[in-house]
Image (cartoon, rainbow, N blue to C red; front, side):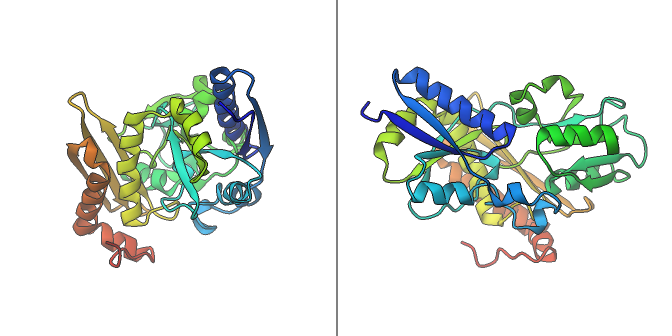
Length: 314
């Protein structure tokens, strides 16, 4: 090891800081004497908290400013929730490391009612995700679902004040020590997760070979292959925060890769869902094949109804 100091760019939310500190701690333990510093950077998504994500730009809201800092060489790397990452990165940057996925699930937090099935008719549910909204309304069309923004602590506080239940990522709750708040992990049969949910992504400059080599010990091949398929699906359908798209891939015991995905209308009345299985070596191809199937079976009409079109994408 030649590098004596590494600067990690991070947002200032408690979850982002947990993620950055986790990587910093692993680096310090791996490389004796290495100094790791965190640089806090405010993103557009952090500044605008009173508007639903779908209305202010979707993917990239929580990454752009961090990427500028990397390109300007003010920081060496950035740690992200993979689900926040756009499928196309700025020239000169790359996703160097994908960590082992903690838990891909969505958690219902409802101290009074506990489960989705037990929520009363017309229950008020908070979530920032159109993906969750569409799939929950498919299962429970009677629910009254409202946009809920803010960090995990803020959302938990708002639950007590305004909602019968809220839905958050299982991984985020567990990482912040709120695993005991989870009253139900919503089955994937009801709600497929966001692309890359539960995994961390470490983004670096493409030409920084030393940093890339130093991060290799954090990379998880199975999660990387699975999320490669998920991101390939997402790239084909152009789905970000603006579109209800869920997808989950996993490496099976026979080393094959299964990929399941959903495209849905925001009101949950039209849900297109399918699955493919193939070689994990063809992860990107599988993601694209599944996207084509869903688009051909009604997904394209949903995308067009939302003002998005995928026809010109190969």
